[in-house]
Image 1 (cartoon, rainbow, N blue to C red):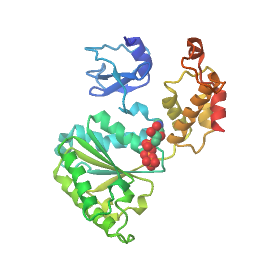
Image 2 (cartoon, protein in one colour):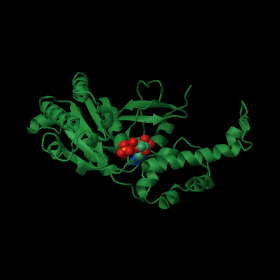
Image 3 (cartoon, helix red, strand yellow):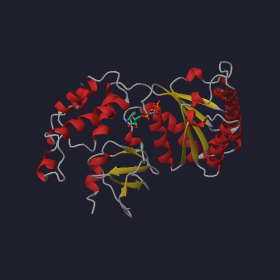
Image 4 (tube, rainbow, N blue to C red):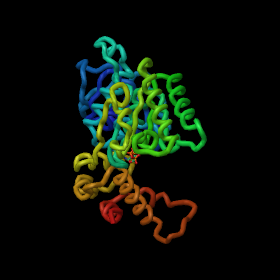
Length: 325
Ligand code: ATP
């Protein structure tokens, strides 16, 4: 039986702003989590969960094994970026009637750009799971096939699949590979694929509930026709995190680690200038591995690990320092 009660929930959710309709996930020990829908708050607006907040749980669900469900809580930093994404993608997907009422077309495409490892894919996955939308991820270079017409057919099938399972999000990673500037490429395949992508994006105008998110490290190499209104007309830059962002990312990646009291995440954030999310994740993993190596010093693997050794296993500040090296 999983141990969880409202006191545990309050501690896990402290500082989280919620509003009716949100879906929140509480991580339990081990690879389990339990999800809740916020059915109401008092006062009836956005509330901030505090240590004194009273939480009532109706019909508690069963803890689920966490597979790859990613929520906004798994993203460190990037608050403004997430806010903008939520306005542009989540709002139109969840409440299309608001846009109809104002008489405007919600965006069909959003381009995320920024250096590798800053969390572009992570954000797209979080939006999909938070909106319960069907998520189709495609990798730009994988679309390109050498046989005539095959690349376009692949792209068409992705859009068809998305249209059949609305609400849906098509995530095209490394979109620069399939939409390079037509004036600068010599390959016929690339030119045809860009043309097909433009046509499919235009076709989306008639459809609601399908949003395309493109991600790239080199936005300037994308065909300008794709960045016109009605296509990828919104762009969000995902930047390298600052000190506060780095600390939040470290918190995300150490949340399931038995951290020793001496671990100072703020200090680690201070000395990791220039690290992106993927680097910080690697740093945490390496620190964890260093701690593991310590309890297995003889370089030989025994079948069972003495219970005592497991219980004292901690990740200390020196493991992080060592990992940095
Ligand atoms: P690329 O341009 O190479 O595709 P990307 O920007 O899409 O990179 P992701 O794939 O989202 O980067 O990030 C790689 C990994 O780094 C993620 O799985 C995640 O674990 C970690 N990561 C990156 N940014 C963050 C963040 N802001 N918060 C928490 N983890 C992060």
